[in-house]
Amino acid sequence: MEHKELNLQMVNNDENVARIIFSPSYIFQGRVSPTAFRWNVLPSGDVEDYISVLRDDGGNLNEESQNFRPRIQGDERYGYALLNVGDVRDISQSVLLEDTTSIDVQPFPSKKLVNHAGIQVVLDGMIVDANTPVNAEIMAIQKELAMLCSDVVPF
Image 1 (spheres, rainbow, N blue to C red):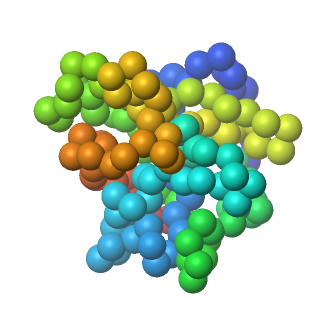
Image 2 (tube, rainbow, N blue to C red):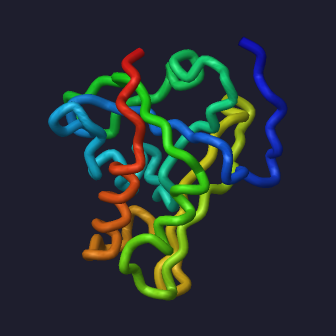
């Protein structure tokens, strides 16, 4: 399948992004779990300040995510779930979040992953990262993201 040209300056509301799913920690009763939307400290020591996703441009998500490694011992790369970008951005309007909360999807392309993007959450003017204490608002966002996911598509 041919890749569509991506606008690397902006991720559009009508686009879908794929969250790569690791099993068993990202799945609960056959659906995507809120645990799929955690921020992590990477093995390199880098602190994630966005939730990693791939822009779904009609390419091969299995091949594109082949080198993704689980963050939790015992997990295996299993498949992916799709989220609509407009729906992700609307979370801050659809649930009872603080007025100072915003959720966005930004492009974070690299040489190896030109389709790489990230879901960023800003609370009280600060970007949420792996060192941000989890509170009720963050848990509500994680739950909403999980609920927006398509069924898991196995590789």
